[in-house]
Length: 276
Image (cartoon, rainbow, N blue to C red; front, side, top):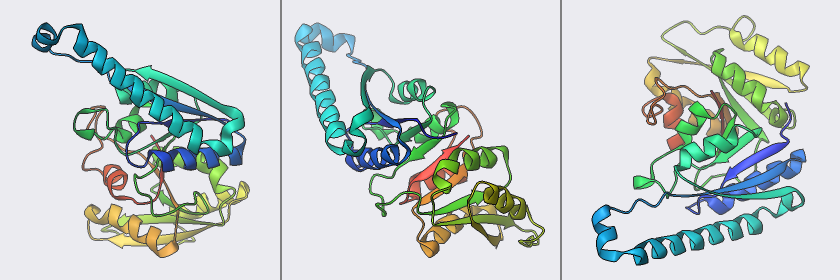
């Protein structure tokens, strides 16, 4: 399915400008509408504080939220210029993750950062969005090491349902990539060959969609090195995008922590396109 409608989360934190610019370039390349979404955190004023400060405290917090929203909108207008012909701005309130999820469900792709400054402790929300949005999520690091997107791609492949979904979702980008490497990691087992292993069918499938891909087989002693091995291939190939399935042991908000997906969401310096 082509990208006709792209949502970018504009939280005003580190990396927001670069995230908007990357989303705008992607939208322009695919002729997609770009929607900027800013989420105001809910005002949670303790009863005791309300009794002492009265309406003045609520007014001050509301004014601060208005100013943050205005700054976010200006960022979106300034850095979303490549897609300015088809832009939309949304200003909503509530929990950042749940609000992004609700709006993302009616788009083709959600572009987010690794965390949200409006949440307690800068809680990372990208994992929760991956698990619950139902659409592919492009996570852009706060300080990406690349300016391009999708020219050289590493596909982390294990033939799971999630990986299959990610490859299908990434096809609009893969079709225009100059190089695609399918990385297959085998833990404590003889490595399959490129001719007989699971990568062969994927390479053939991609070829039917105009994507020329190669296979890289890696054998590890244990699963702890999976994320590091994927990042090593990113560095070796000069990739500017990782495509992978998103896994979680539960639907809890912190389900991604400790998983390969969670490690990559935290450690990667290149964008990840993740589907669940």
